[in-house]
Length: 179
View (cartoon, one colour):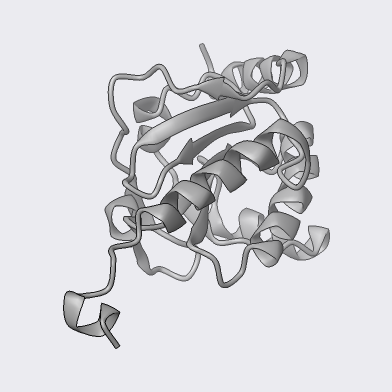
């Protein structure tokens, strides 16, 4: 199948998807690392202790365009909390991504996946595809299709994971607890 045919299949699949939050059924959480748009090295393993939302998208995916604005609002709302958003672009070039984000007035961190290895490791079969990880780095939920991450079941699941993360904070050392 050509790249164009695969891209069309992903868009059609994304538009027909039921954007329902589902428990993660994969074997384990795949690794995720690479360069971001600014050339910095990003590694999912470095986000332990934070709830992480991993979002696969492309500029040509219409449902992705809608969801990116929801994700930007979510990121802004959760600033200062143990949360990180990693948007992973599905095989496009840096210039195209930058132009798109500027035209859409969206400010999100973007991890590049030029050879689609990350998408394959995560089992991305359509776009947009999003995964929600708990603070221990374990994938807990996935969503296929555009979702509003600022309201509804997705937001509730995210808040639940943030509450779990807060509950897991280590107790202060005994010497500090007595004062």
